[in-house]
Amino acid sequence: MLEVGGSKQHEEQVDRPYLLSIITPAYNEANNLPALYKRLNPVLDSLKLDWEWIIVDDHSSDRTFTLIKELNKTDPRVNGIRFSRNFGSHLAITCGLHHSRGNCAIIMAADLQDPPETLPLLLKEWEEGAKIVFAVRAHREGEKASKVGFSRLFFFLMRFVVGIRELPSTGSDFFLLDQHVVDAFCQFKESNLSILPLITWLGFRQTTITYTKEARAHGRSGWSLGKKLKLVVDSITSFSYFPIHLISLVGFIVSLIGFCYAGVVIFNALTGNLPQGWSSLMVVLLVIGGFQMLMMGVLGEYLWRALDESRRRPRYLIEAKTGSFAPTRDYQEHS
Image 1: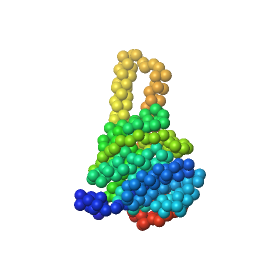
Image 2: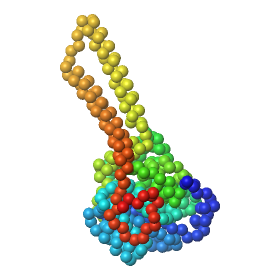
Image 3: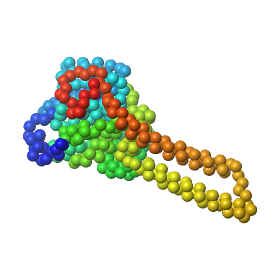
Image 4: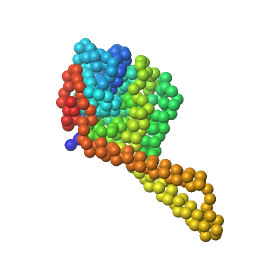
């Protein structure tokens, strides 16, 4: 059974050195990882705590994993995992959490957009009792207005349509999780995972800090439009059946309009005013047909995810590791 940590256990954590796990998903980040290590290392050493850095290589095509192995040779606190193929950043984070050993874990990107200098602020809130600490973006440097607008629309939908009101309004890719939250998270076996809504849904004591998200240092993000759209669909279908309710409502409204129009046609026929207009009839047929196809598509998304979960395939496969790892928090090692 999962225990919810109390104040006594938390006091023991802050009175003695504890272990911090840093989880970083990486995809073609060979140019960013050395610079991130140079900034991360002095910040963590100044905190006077034990730490480990777990970098999960999402099957990069560049020297990312080679660089991780080189970092591990010079600093054994740096550990690396390489996926057998590209599984996506959310499953990379999941894998890192499964392998983490820390009293708390911090998830941060490899592209230097999340400044390591923010780590003490996250840890301060955790030491004061918070179990989940979100670093909320107060400002985003070097981001296009369209990308920021898409992000805010997504979080608006998640908060006010799906109903996860506790989700940060501007989102968060950079956050801290207490070990109890990590243990709770590792009990979930979903294949089509949306991490931030799930972590928020878990409950526990949550708080936020604000920071400036810096511009990407090198390279281009692998977070494509297709992956963003899949995340939207995964997030909505995982936490809400609102689309299915919407289908029922739209179907009822369209049917009601159809019956009303049928009444008008019958009335006109009885009064000798036969209906005219092939074009208007085709418009009605196309609109109704379009609604039907859309409804089938929504139902298909739910049905596909149910099928995907029923297969019970491993969520990720590990090709290689470097460094030392304890037994995973997950119930089964997917390697």
